[in-house]
Length: 121
Image 1 (cartoon, rainbow, N blue to C red):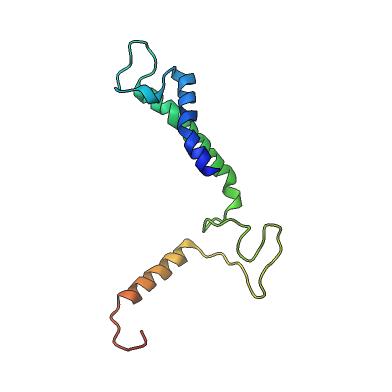
Image 2 (image 1 turned 180 degrees about the vertical axis):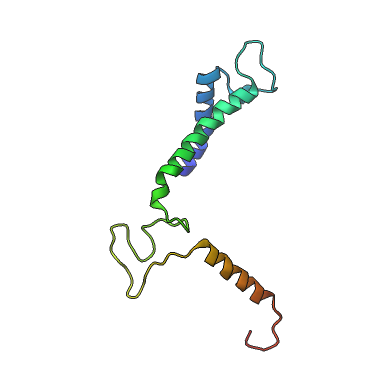
């Protein structure tokens, strides 16, 4: 589905630009406003890109409540299924703040950079 939407995006943008400024981004060569007083390349690109970008952002904001605040994972995964049933015998879900993850990452990098003088490193 994503491939189909991505493939159709330029054509949808063209239709939006045609409706807004009566010009296509596909047949523009210069940034100057044409003699026909249709939209310039800048206007055409604006109308071909900005409405789709705004719609994309709106859909991301609308679906934000389905994602965890700290880590972008869908709430249906982990030890809880989408219907609320717990899976696994001793599993649990914990919130881990980003600062804690950054601290762990820095500590792991510091340990990896240290030279190892004993064999079980």
